[in-house]
Amino acid sequence: MQTEKLIESGRKVLMNTYNRYPLVLAKGKGTRVWDVDGREYLDFVTGFAVTSLGHGHPQVIKAMEEQLGCFVHTSNAFWLEKQIELARKLTEISFADKVFFCNSGAEANEAALKLGRKFARLHGGESKTRIVSLNNSFHGRTFGALTATGQRKYQKDFEPLVPGFDYVDNNDGEALRSVINENTAAVILEPIQGEGGVYPVSSAFMKLTRELCDAFGALLIFDEIQCGLGRTGHLFAYEMGDVVPDIMTLAKALGNGIPIGAMLATDQVADAFQPGDHASTFGGNPLVTAAGCAVLDVMTAPGFLEEVRVKGAYLKSALQKLADERWDNAPVRGEGLMLGVTVGDTAPGIVEACRKRGLLINCVGGTVLRFLPPLTVSWEELDEAIEVIHNHGL
Ligand SMILES: *Cc1c(COP(=O)(O)O)cnc(C)c1O
Image 1 (cartoon, rainbow, N blue to C red):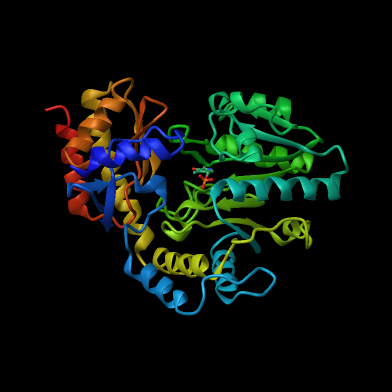
Image 2 (image 1 turned 120 degrees about the vertical axis):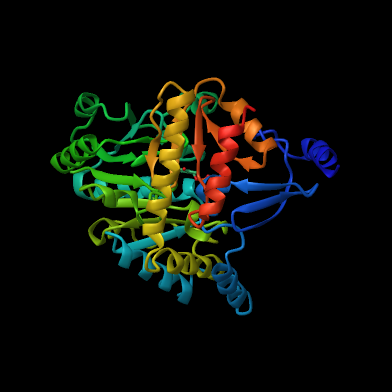
């Protein structure tokens, strides 16, 4: 058994920042992964909505191999062909006109918060600096993103945080009205809260947020790092409603596992950034943007998203049936292949039982089961997973 030995040596040399499952994964193909002792699993975690096209997607590998043969990095001091191509694709498929590339979700949100404050300063003066975010949100671990993350458990040991943030509960219109004012630079929210437990923002709250942002000259930032890029069966979650943001952040699935983040904005907003305002050494390098281009080509192919919606509805109704029988009719939340259900304290035990039967899922907040299969999951794999969850306790 390799597993125990590796975990033991890992404990000695890796900082203790993760509660890891006792599993050492060695390789993957499509929806399946294998551990170092040769056990096979269905991967319904996908590195938290990162490997959305499954492991080793041939089109992504081919694009990267071609790029490896040219070069992987030069510098943003030069114009980069693949970076231009990926930005062009992203602006063609979204509301946005301009893109800034970085390397992770937290960095994309840092860029969004900086752009939001710069724009507000230019158009509203020195005191227009405040940012509103939602309780139970997740925006990343760097100081700006951590401050935006409305969860005290992640913040409390790292104070002082970045000044100028206000928090309101998801879908609490009254609270939003009471904090937003002429000093608000931006509101940041996830259209569907991911790490918080798959909680969608209601369309009424979304509309109110847009109205209040417009009334007070504040920007609306959508963090679509988890719910964007096909996860909901739509390219972007905002497409499901009538509200369009001014800024949107992406990361996770954009490189199918290659680290890349992006911050998108309309021309009017993006114009606030001038040379020297923001930068990233690795951001948008040729290798990661080549991967990103291939990912978008796959996701925008005819029929791709439609199939995600059909499969998502199938998995959701199977899970709802289970929830009706076992979990007090708890409603299964989410859209497409981003699903969650609150099952209570038994959640970690269910995750473990599923793992022992060859299915990787995860639980958030100790009580919510979250399902994030690859968007390329097959019908057979869906049935196999449903069967495992159904039999987990037997
Ligand atoms: C994962 C996540 C982040 C942070 O991304 P990192 O790449 O881990 O920095 C930010 N926002 C949301 C909604 C996320 O799911």
